[in-house]
Length: 247
Image (tube, rainbow, N blue to C red):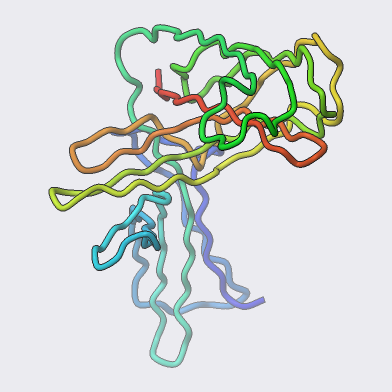
């Protein structure tokens, strides 16, 4: 084994908050004496952007992820290869002040309640109702509720929860909006029993969610879709906007 460099942070979960000190050690391992011309540490915060294919002649960039990395470089003499090691860590914003007010939502899904449907007469008959305990969510706590299928003329194939991140950016020339699925979990499989309460339970993925952000030219918002897949591959979808906070 040649010479290697490694970074070990003191905090095992690598999660830090504003104002905290990032500490640890740099470990340089080698079977023989090693010459170097200095060891440097650099910290970077990178926002990944992607171009929107929907724009024509206008540059539109959407937030994709924010990554914080600590990079160690060991500079070696001219004929030796420099050693480099990067370590990713997570920065959480400071908790918001105040108390969160729960926003309970009851919902009922029938052919008449669906939007963007051209021919309602072609839809099978079904009645689905349920609740979300709150659409004002704490990022460290799960989204909870329940769903009940009262009746359906067509057998059910699957019931899923789809978490969507919605990014909006723009200026005086116009705004653009892009939605990205960041998580999809199945809460029921097969033709579920009628009138049986099915729990809704979704943990927010740490690396792909953040508190809801709204600025003049930039917004990061979240939505959850309740998706019922029928055996004939019809999709029944109900959308719920979420507000995510950190307390």
